[in-house]
Image (cartoon, rainbow, N blue to C red):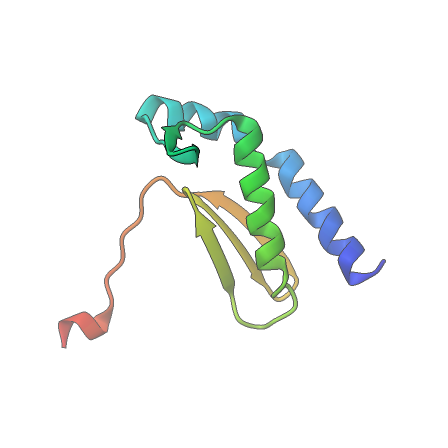
Length: 103
C-alpha cells in the first residue's frame, strides 16, 4: 500500500467512525453557527461538517510521517497527525496556561 493509499484508508475509517450527527446535535442545541456563504450564519449541515472534517484531516495528513505533532482546526474540529497517526476531534471547550505567563 502506498503512503497516499494508506492515508486515504485512514481518513475513510475516521470519517466512518466519527459521530457527525452528534456534533450537529450539540451545535444545534448551542446555536453554534458557521458562516455558510452569502454572509449567512447557520448551524452547518452534517454534510458540511463532514466536508470540513475531511479537509482538515487531509491538511494534517501532509505531516503524517513527521515526529512533531501537527494540528489544524476550524469550527470546533481539530485534526492532528503525528508519527503515522491521524486523529479527529470536536472540541467544545478548552483553556490553557503556560508557565511563561507567570514569570
